[in-house]
Image (cartoon, helix red, strand yellow):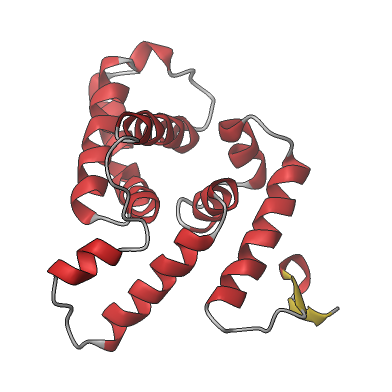
Length: 177
């Protein structure tokens, strides 16, 4: 594959990578850095991409591994996943959309990491179940199960359903348990 074709493919995937990175990190600055580092790593390891495989899944794998490697390095620093410290420093805007996004980010942060990751891979980066299973090295059934539980918990955290509601999102929405 030519360098120009490879570069064009990378540019085409940047919006998906940025959305996934933003959802993982919760910070536009960190997300932009993650995407940049992902693209640099992809560019320097072009020979490891197998033609005929899913390019987006390959990039998402690089981004995901980069994020977790950075996360492990920062494990000794103060974690602020619920933005408690940040909210004391920053003054938020009055826009309702900003508040809604903060609510969604908080709800996402309450999900177990493996559920959040699957939800973002499929919902944000638009990977198929099979591609997400390959990236995470798990069975497709596990992907579907985690996705269903993640969606149900997210809806519960956002107050969209009560705890007694079971979401079967594979078959048109909420079903009472």
